[in-house]
Length: 172
Image (cartoon, rainbow, N blue to C red; front, top):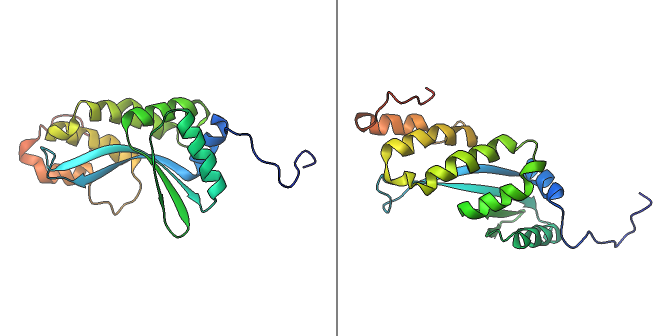
């Protein structure tokens, strides 16, 4: 690389293409489901975009600059080996998706599902209706990896079977 010298710094603001590539390999659009005494249905589902990066503080700083430039609200946590950057507010996930979406490859489908289907349902207050919560879990199941998850659409089908209209197409 003849054009790169030791000590050269990347541009002040990373391009959306770079952030999209990083997110394709180290990020994911997903949902989080938790028990909640504050929700009418006893559970709370919310959208999230997560990016995990190795303990490279200078990369984290550039990602934070990018998110700040696009007015994306986020949280940062650090464990022994990684930084976790989480975007949880629907408006911020939308802004983030608008910025990097055209450049995503691996995460394009999940981003579209989260932004076009889960977030509108979340904003309709899906957490106040067991039927709506159950229906949106079919999409959530596509976004969440792992066979050992407790909260799946099937879990809520069994839990609320007598209270649901199961004639609705749930994909099962």
